[in-house]
Structure formats: C-alpha cells, structure tokens
Image 1: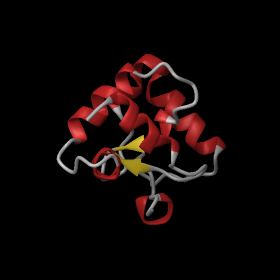
Image 2: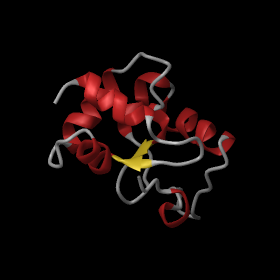
Image 3: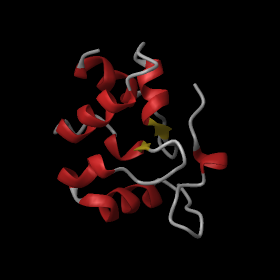
Image 4: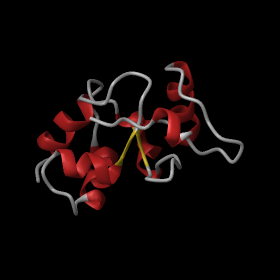
Length: 100
C-alpha cells in the first residue's frame, strides 16, 4: 500500500462525512491496513487530502491529526462541514459515516 493510494481514497470522502481508518484501508485495497492509513494521515502535508475526515471506527477523533492542529482543529473542521458529535465527543457515526 502506498501513501498515494491512501490519499486518493481519502479524497473520495465527501464533504460532511467521515470514514474510519479501516474503511479507508479497504477502499485502497488493503483491508488489514488500518495502521498504515493512520501513519499516512500523520505524515500528510497535502491540503487536498481531507485528513480531518478520517476517524476511528467508533467515531473518536484521531491522534494522527496532531501535526495539523490536534483534535480541536479536526473537530472544528468537521463541525464546519456540518458533522455532529455525540455527548461523549465522538462523531455520530450512525449519521455521518461515509458508505461508498
């Protein structure tokens, strides 16, 4: 799996939706590559890749967003796109998870 494949998969996540690391790995053709997706998101400096739309499978914000402003910046970007959060701070995956 290459970063380019992961980034291309991430670019498919629509505005106002989120995807899990595992889903992104599967879309890129590597269903067991969730950790590699996390590493790729952490290393990404390309503004065309919507890294903020990648969260854990249960909707927690990602640690890999630290280089881009941390969880608060990720949350702010998602809120700007209309993504809503549950009372415990997780993304409402039932409503905002992308299903390609």
